[in-house]
Each structure stands twice: as structure tokens, then as C-alpha cells.
Length: 169
Image (cartoon, rainbow, N blue to C red):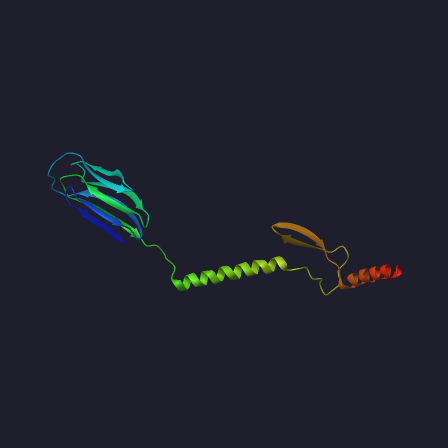
């Protein structure tokens, strides 16, 4: 949105921005009271800086000054002439309470889905595979190759273990 201010001779303008302020132009009035060098200053955090030096030959000076939201600043006119300062504001997209609630819910759902992904285990497929079948799994960003056994192969291993254990009883 357009922004502009007129500062009277030896005057000042003090403000605090709610949005980002981009100052783009500093101009002098058309009829000058004197032809010497004219300067406009900005004061932020007790530090004063010249933002434009304008002579009688050229009545305007393009500038690019960005003031962040919530910063207090003072524009100073230390001349005998009127200074016009213009620019524009950039509105900050502040989330509404409803949007903040939905963002919190989305973050919680994302955290839950990540936890459930970590807990997932590999389930043997229903149709039998050859003993050399392997599945590539990504765990913590590292790819690992895991052999997959069919249901029948698992039963055979369990039966062998039971027979072996029963032999010592």
C-alpha cells in the first residue's frame, strides 16, 4: 500500500511500523528557499543516518530503505524547505487463530505419522518367495537390504528349533 509523509522545515516524523515499510523516494518542494545541499535523515535506535542529499538542481532522490515491523524510527528534515518522503508498506500475513489451530493440528498429525512409520515392521507376503528374496528398506535415511522369508519357510525354521530343543529335554 502507498505510504507518504510531508515533513515541514526543521521538523520530524516519529512512528512505529506494524508492517514492513519500504521508503523509495525523497523529494524537495518546487520553490526552494536556498540553493545549498539539503539532507534528510533517519534515526533508528539512537543512531542518525543521512538517507538523501539533494541539491537545487535535482529536487528528488531515489532511495531504498526497508524498515522492519515493530521498529521505531524518526525521519528528520534539517533544511529550510519542505521534504516529501514516499514509499509503500508490505502487509505481514499474520495467521488468524483458526489458522494457528490448524497448523498445530497438522504438526501433531505429522509427528504421529512419523512415529508410526518408525514402528512399522516388515510383514511376510502371502505368496511364497524364494529364500533369496530381499526387500530394501530405508531406516533413518539409510537403505538396508533385509531378506524376506515366506510363511512356510518361517514354519520350517520354527519346527527345526522345536525339534532341536525337544531333543535335550
